[in-house]
Image 1 (cartoon, rainbow, N blue to C red):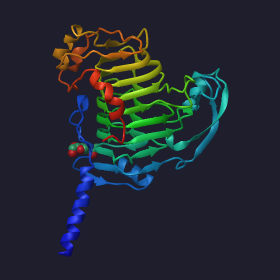
Image 2 (cartoon, protein in one colour):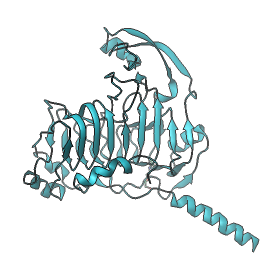
Image 3 (tube, helix red, strand yellow):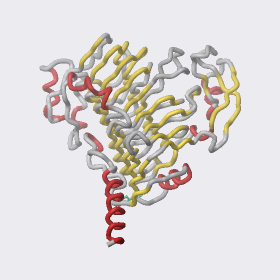
Length: 378
Ligand SMILES: *[C@@H]1O[C@H](CO)[C@@H](O)[C@H](O)[C@H]1NC(C)=O
């Protein structure tokens, strides 16, 4: 009798943890990603344990049930950096990483910098992992996540990454992907980041879905010296397929996102709010479909004179061209106190062929995104 009771309460505890696993499923290009499903479930308690679970070759669901503070775990560095945007206290300074100040900012004033080493490089994440925050408890302070080159099948859900040397460019990236495939970033909040909130490097990152995430650009140290973070999201890959859906991106001043390389980006039902510079930057080779998004107080939804290809879903009649490639008529975007988003290029729509494409709601349906995006909301 007693052992049966113990057994049933242990089972109940187990079921509770299992119920806290990945919620929902990826839409769009990374549809079908399973992460650590079927693998070992673990709840790390120390930064060392977390690092070990993320970086081993075991399929795992890793529950984040507390704040892991990496500041101080790898020491600090005092060095000479530079002030490319001036020495006003509202301006970001730069670390001379890989000689960046010396090579690219030779005329910038030299300044002393002191930064935390842990934030500079994210935690190594290998294949077949789900990193899942529980409730609003999953917070990584002072170190981001960096998928190892070649990683496949990773889910990052319901966590917050913050305090990566926000005073300094090159102080750290929150989430780094380069040469990966099948990655789902969902309900992730990033704030107070030194460099990029999310970066897909130059190698092919293939199928990636970023959904329900919250890019919080508010900062006291900005490259535009105005309290708005410049280095939002960078997609630079040579063959990246990125779905961005239901994300909330605010208080940025540039690169939100910068789309480069040979990236195909489907940006649908996102909410952009309060940007003092540009949201999209679309370089040669990049291909973007933007539909059903809200642009509120966005000075330039796209940087003018862009060299890449953009279909901005300009009108109901023009949007019918989406039907055969995307499986639906594209949704117009909504603009409030914002600049324009001109783009009628559909010449690249065949690139959607055979891919999973996210559905699209109206831009009105995206107006609730600020309250549904980010960690702690599922
Ligand atoms: C990930 O899981 C798949 C399916 O079980 C397996 O084939 C693959 O080898 C795993 N990858 C790694 C790097 O362990």
